[in-house]
Length: 133
Image 1 (tube, rainbow, N blue to C red):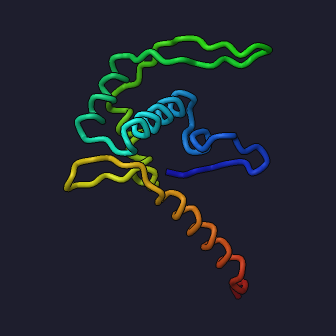
Image 2: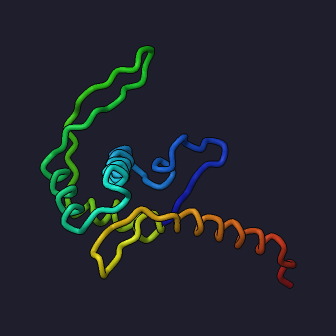
């Protein structure tokens, strides 16, 4: 996955930097909120139930911007296969979520932060290298 961002127009939340569509942002935020509500860790079965609930259509509250912010209930439906391919797998590969093979659980992780710091250090090393001849 490639993360592209505009340093002059950084969004206020991390989800909008990582994911391309508004629907992906909403689903990723819902997943993280679900995991936080359950102690930052959920089992394989619970993840499947979450994905199935999204597939069947889940009622969520959307805050609409305007002169007066309004909360509106809306049904969100997200394909189960696309959830695993476009939301969960990228979050696992970036280090936002870890999967424990032995316990069969998904857990929120700090590896994403460490990886981003490592990328920053790689850039600093590149800046300090002499030019190629």
